[in-house]
Image (cartoon, rainbow, N blue to C red; front, side, top):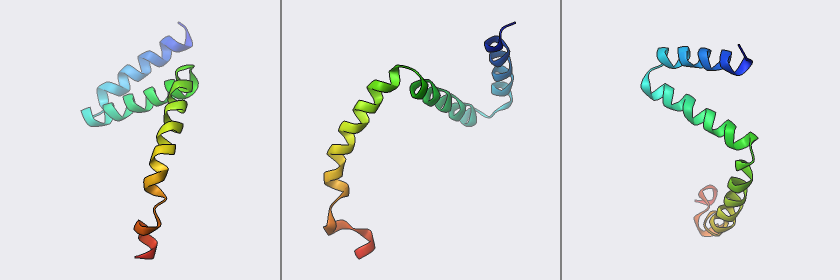
Length: 69
């Protein structure tokens, strides 16, 4: 049995024991790892950079600085 097959079997057992909402968290984390360590992550990084530039206009607003209120 390959290492991946062993991990699949162990993860299946873990999923059975988790409540539904926690199983969803595990799935989200697994997806995060896939995107972080595969070629798909390059697409997401570019999208995040575009979002960051757009949101900087909102975040860098001195009129709404919560530390100055």
